[in-house]
Image (cartoon, rainbow, N blue to C red; front, side):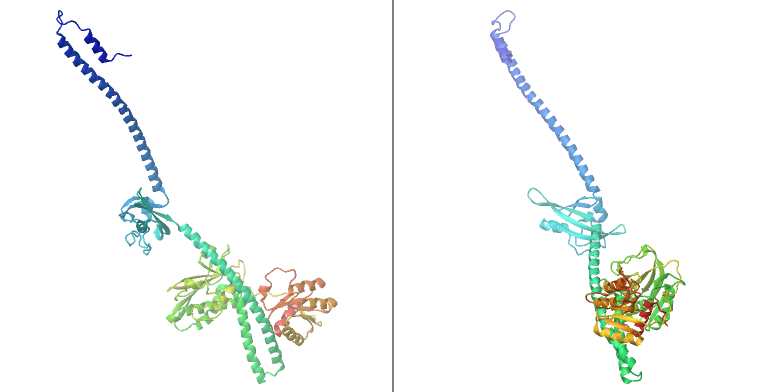
Length: 591
């Protein structure tokens, strides 16, 4: 054990010299110094003890300082990373104090809301930075400060010449005592999402419109078919009775009036079929510009006073496959629709333009029929525009519906027929309209390349050999069948009748060489016209057949069938129509 300073001084006191020794101080004096030295040593010992503690504390402080400096470096790095993250986020971020002072604003927020340094969006009840920003929506920040909940609002802004839709969300920041100390505001660009949602809604609406159109087409086609069957009986019997009476007979005059009314009803049925795209168009290669010029005089003559027709029509082309009468009706309906749109003003200008356009130029949002899109080739365009009051966006999807009008009920089939005829020709229609400015209808047809305008191709037929003709008539409607028998007999044919397909096959099988031609209805119970045709051709492969129906030829013949007739006749038909159809089936030139 190491002796302490106290032990040393005690030993020194015990062994000091006796008082009075030669050359030595007095005992009292020595003790005094020794005590002083002892006290000093004790002080030094205490000093050594505290010095060690101080050194230890200094080491601890040095370590704490290093830890603090390390934590501060990490905090600065974390803050730098966080700031870089916030500044490079593709969303706008800002933080505001409870008195709406901006605490943090990233570049994207400054770009979208340049005045955000003055406060959050709409915080003062007015727009800060963007004049075209919606002003009616309350600030999400103010609402978050008021109730502490998360609030969201959407705004539309102009960003670098582009319209953007932003979703702004505000979230309250709370301290440990659950007190709101700040609000974070974030702005996200949801333009693409909105476009996707709009496109989805458009496609959904298109699907619903297609379903509605298909349902309407089936219903209208069925009505027209049954209507034509009844008209066939009415008009056929009227014709037969009128032929039996002298022309000057007063009864004949009344019957003629009834026939005219029946023909108008038949025309209405034909217009309905045209709307459905079931019209039989005698397509030929025509010059669209020439066809339009040929109708200008009549169009101008029919314009009410105060209206002017202006044209931009080339000298030639484009060439399309269509019917001249159809172009006339399309023009007439569109021009009539144009001046009616300006009727309240009692004056206006209607413009007609013909041109060739590329697929990329057909970009109108409203295309008809629903689902139509242009081909990869150029299209011929017939454009009719007016300076009328325009069409409400809620009505554009309905303007081609039969009898639709925003003027009064039952206006007619004008635009409906336009769409049907263009659809039958393989084209489409676009509509551009702005309220108070006017409307533009553009009708597109496939362009025919390397073709010359001409007449429809003639059917090659053989000369009539004047042999007796025997007809097998297949018709399930008793009234139509009886009337048709008389018609055929008056033409000079020998007739055998059958009330349905099964009966016809039974009769034909007994004497297959005894019949020259079959006139067969399409829609019959048990065995329809197509099935009857197949069964008869199985017995006699080259049998001439005329198919008859209340449906239009184009609609009936559009699908693939195992056998097809040589000719077709639409109901209601007259004696001349029936005779010509049988001659075509037999290959006899019509006189």
